Length: 193
Image (tube, rainbow, N blue to C red; front, side, top):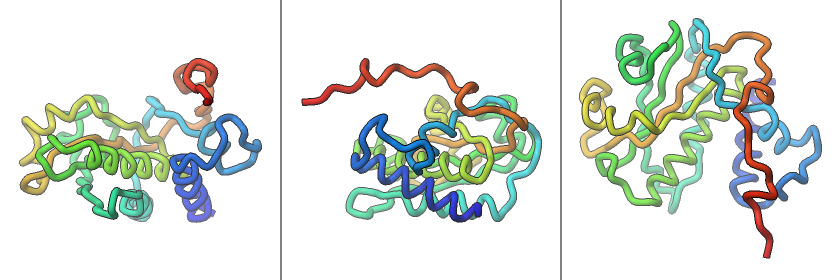
């Protein structure tokens, strides 16, 4: 069941990214509706380990993300060390992890590499939620990571962090729709020609 849900989430995110779906036109039980209505960047993380099996599935989703010319410019660094993780993102409960997505260019990558890494980041983010975990994307700490933590994280030579995803257990009973921040209306951000 979890593998089927992971496949649906990844397929639907690629489907949406390709522009083949109509905004707001999805059926209530469609893969598009599952993604648009049941994920949120939650803040209610709790203690509890992310298993190696879950992590393997999440990382596999990142590896399968699309990239320009199939260059796959990313490198993934899994941060399980609580002391190091808390220096990057505060208030990390036991068992939560960070996945740092980096690309060649010491963080000064071109737009194509940034977009490729963003697609891998989103795939990781959605895969974690498909497994029932909480996930949250961060881009704010990248300068700090690139200036202070590259050696501690073991980023490859010539690579720089472009994003990270926090993954962990979340408090039970959290509703993704009501827990999410408000969103702009489609009418305010979409135009048709």
